[in-house]
Image 1 (tube, helix red, strand yellow):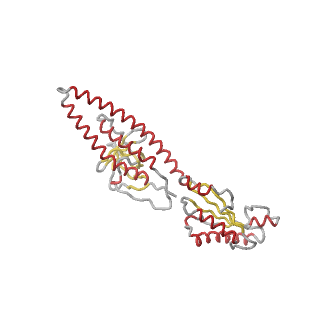
Image 2: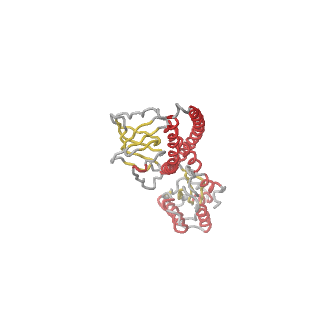
Image 3: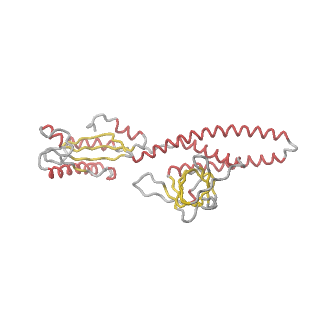
Length: 338
């Protein structure tokens, strides 16, 4: 399965941040930055201006704050995947357009001295794309302003050029308004992406497979192997899933023996999936034997005890991934259809 595509949000984001750069260059009378309060604080937003040791952060309300980066500042990944170590970064990774979180303390000068800066790999990739495309736009904007300055110097003797320049500004303002509407749509899409990312720790049961065992046995039958073979084939092209294995026993025998027997049955299923189909151990939740607990049927009848000699295998798929992972399992209508 392919990873989540972000192509639908990258292009609008490039337009958004490029437009911000143009508007910032045109707006010579912009408001002063918001001073950071004294003491420890946290904030988040987008980098809109960079220098050697500082950068300007703009939050969702449009307020800007000056952030200072020191040798003690820790810059690292805001990790989504808890199975691996978070990456560390340098100040050179603090690109224009990067969405990040800052923890630090305010100074009397109004700056926020950063102690810790975090951002996700996805936001860094978006910022890198923006950075590669914004520079040529900024050069064109600067060139346009230089032409404007020359025209203004000649206004006393060339009033006709002033009229033409005002018309050009009206066109630029209309284009900026259109770009702002595009940027608003990009922000909305980014918010939807954040919601999907926040669901990465949430799993949904998509399928349950029941493996039957003979009396006092933990060996797999031919039918059981066929069922597990089908399950393994279904997982070949799927990511973001876990396998939960639970063993059970009938009421024949004492409680302690049945608990051990159900544990062996669960471990037999796990061993078959690992050794025969090379399913990664990290995909399998620690198997457990429940003995006589949670019977599927009454133990008072022969048929009921047969149903209780079983292992339940559940497929849990990450909700934060694209729907293809779920579709891979949802097409199986029967509990024993593998």
